Image (cartoon, rainbow, N blue to C red; front, side, top):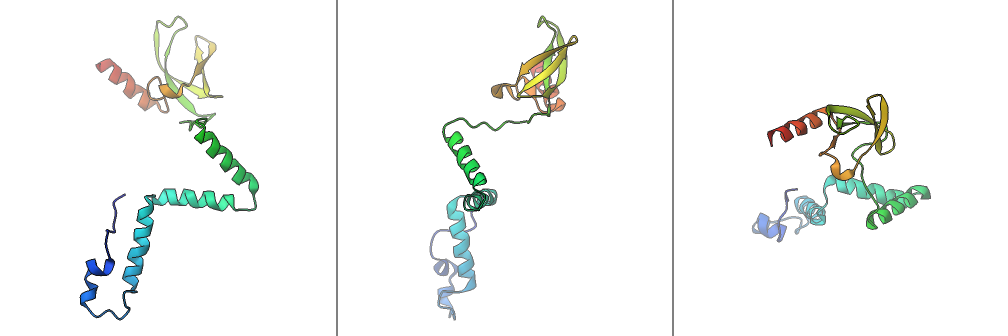
Length: 157
């Protein structure tokens, strides 16, 4: 985010000291500038500020289950146990699918996410296909368009 404020004294830079200031440096423009500068100094975006506000409000609310859940998620994230999935159970994802022998390319097929695995129907049989996080955007995709685009890129290589 681009800064709107600058280092230094507002009155010196705005050159209002050259003019008679009836407020003795306590003008509303200076107050607005100082408040904006303090906000920009945090380095947070407006969205991050909203998230932080929600966390603080829930931590001090009467509903301790929310605060406990936030603490649990923060600890899991710190321990490296937190993963944000690109989809949820019930979503459809798209794989490049092969026959049971792994030799005939059947093309891009939709798979329903049932439990971080997709069910593929290959020659009338259900097959579980693991959704490896590292393979998202490589071998499985959230939309048919993404999958087709990746398949075209492979053909060009």
